[in-house]
Image 1 (spheres, rainbow, N blue to C red):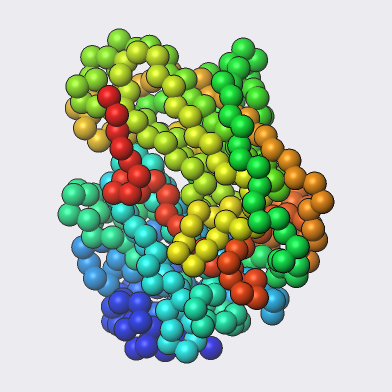
Image 2: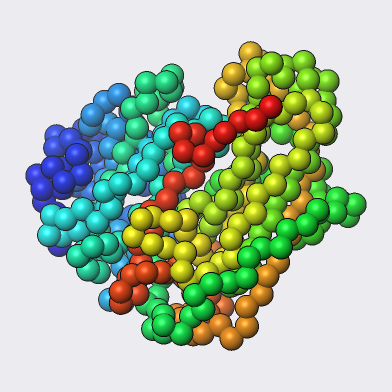
Length: 385
């Protein structure tokens, strides 16, 4: 049984007096501003809209996620979608039945052209697996974000992963990535995708694209157990970019795992000359999670997002770039993880073998906990140039 309205409101810091939330369209979840009336959150992807960050009631959305098997482990992730992602931030927290907060330090921060990701695991420090969990998505009231009073669309993802039966048999470490300069000769054609509909691309093939400020291109690449992903974006010289170089236009690459958790990110300033951006993930490994909330890694469909921030720019800007990806690494003798696939993942886009890697580590009894945030300006962005 989930926490009562009073207990959950005090626990999560949300308002106790809920306000009406408009009914959601098919494929969407409206959520509730009252934890006692939390809306069921299905496995897989749902879209929702977050409210006014300056309103202590409307900034909260409460959901209820339920496991389908007693031994399953739930992971809830969320990401902002345009147009809210350019000027916003939010956090995710989860609550268990005995009035205990199982994730109380989910990160949030302003995003400048990219998404903000929060990932919550359902077991941490005395919070055992239970039939369901209360999920609070709270929009951040960031004083430097001028649009945080506008509605903000978001993608919410719920995964259920099987219990790991042989955690002690797994390798403690994996070989580090071996990066190299990526070839850009073999050109392919692709239409850029979005967060909810990423475009599939092939490894070691290049794609020439144009990106406008304030937009995000999202692509998907399959990454398996023991593998790592190298992403490279080569920016063509541009007189238009050089003319606004004093405004320090920001270009970034973000890589998200199947749970929407951060795998890697790189952000820097465009100069107008030929610029190169590289992002390299760690190998997919079972030792990626820890109690301190390290980067989550799961095998499956990884998302590569490229963005050009509209912040600091006096007007619109377009850049031409060449995108190349490379998947490398391999581990043999992968053990059985006790499940056919991660429930909630679109298996039609990427078949998941039964030995798919599940992000687990340092948690006695094999309990999952995930805590991450993607593209947080206040944590990782260090523009150069």
